[in-house]
Amino acid sequence: MEQKYKGEFAEFWKRYRRNRLAVVGLALIGLYVILALGADLLYSYDFITGNQIPNAFSGIASFAEVEDGGTVRRHLYLLGADNFGRDVAGRIIHGARVSLIIGFVTVAFAVVIGGSLGAVAGYYGRRLETVIMRGADILLAIPNILFALAIVAALGPSFRNLLLAIGITSLPVYVRLVRASVMTVKDQEYVEAARAQGASDFRIILIHIIPNCMAPVIVQATLGIAQSILSAASLSFLGLGIQPPSPEWGNMLSEARSYIISAPHTLIFPGLAIMTVILAYNLIGDGLRDALDPKLKR
Amino acid sequence: MLKYIIRRLIHLVPVLLGVTLIVFTLTYISPGNPARMMLPQDSTDEQVAELEKAMGLDEPFVMQYFHFLFGYDGPGDSFDYKGLWALDLGRSYVSNRPVFGTILERFPNTMLLTFLALVLSIVISIPFGIISATRQYTKTDMAVTIAALIGISMPAFWLGMMLIWVFSVNLRWFPSLANPANLKSIILPALTLAAMNTAVQTRMTRSSMLEVVRQDYIRTARAKGVDERNVIYRHALRNALIPVVTVIGLQVGQLLVGAVLTETVFSYPGIGTIMVDAIQRKDTPQILASVVFVALVFALVNLGVDILYAFIDPRIKAQYIGVVRKKGGLLNGAKI
Image (cartoon, rainbow over all chains, first blue to last red; front, side):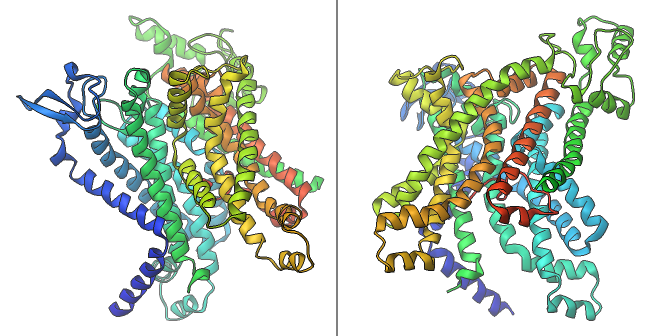
């Protein structure tokens, strides 16, 4: 069994690897994950959230005296400093942590809840399906970012509400996706065989059906992470997401907006960070779609 | 045909009711008391309670939702409104103007921006998609593909600011603030708004062209001696454009929503700026009205696009009989 699993993964990797851009995407995300994990080693959180007013708008790759944890030291501002003299590179790296968490948590939430609802709707059909699918239709009828905006505006801007807003708005896609997959799988012989052996509905759905409808969900989830990160940055840009001085790419851009003439570097780099992360997830999503598509197999 | 339209309209009613219920519920559970916010800081609890009563805020949830839909007639006259069905949800807490007055006044501006962006995206994407497909695996194709990939990954608000930085701050070609009276000032916001759609449509045109040129009838056309130009433009393009047109239709609604952020970046007086201002000032009636308004227009635009398709392509009607069409189209983020 284990041998077979290894074989499947090797097969998958062989096909994924063929798409060079997808490999680049994976490498980029790997880099961001490493930076996000090591953020505290590179720059302490207190340092990148604390003001260093005398160094405001220091240029790219400039050195300056900074106060860090009670001592004064020389510091390299790799990507310059913002309006409070905070290190832009440090804030981007700490912001990566926030963005990656948002992307992962919201999509995990949406996949688990939306996927369960979709599986139940697809498996049982009838009334339950109608109720669940009408609910999903209503959620889908409100444009994502607008809905997230309304939720955060109503509940107040906080990290938890941001996660909730983006999680809820990404949910209905997975309901539809899993339902559609379950409906194609549920009448296959192996499901019937499991039922004949007396397996419970729960077991059939979890062990026999779900693993066979994962491919489209995995692809959508990868693209969904990109979408979530973008939504979070957009909401923070509007002042409805993560609040400064906490570092987040969207709120960095929102603050930098006023200094577009005097300090364009504070505007360029956080935007590049958002763009590369979203690009990377899109590339991975495309690669996964090709690698998991049975039509393209060999 | 009429039956199809009626069927679609009937399906729309519960969805729209659901949308209004959700938006209303969100406002209802939102912390902060509007009556207290409207009164001076040192008001007593009795004064707040009195104002709440006048505004109908002391009534149960269901009644308030009912008022929201069909109007409210309170003890005084100052807080009366006719309800959502009559596009009247009372006055803004901040400006004291009817909320839908402001929205309807600014909506044409948003439509203008959306329309320009739509035209731009079509004019740019289709030629580039064709060029890219007909020169598959050349440097041109690579450049277009990479540009499109970057296009779908770029946050619109950042692109807008970068355009301002390059074209307003450094080159001084365009103003950084946009207003509908000056068409030149809308070019940057329209480009910003169009970017994502242009990228999506370019990718769609390319892949659809590549699919079509592999078909047998294209081989037949070539075999019977049709020159390459005619093969591409008369035989391939016509068929390749069908899915592209579908995507363009689905994107109209997305453009409308994307306008919210783009307008904010360029301080363009449209629905988006109304909404964001209202949210920042906690102007509940204005938030409620603008969110519901955009959601309704979004639903109606998508419905209109669908009905239009049923006219153009009978296959689409057959496909959707008895099935409600879903918003946003392809997996909602429109990643193709």
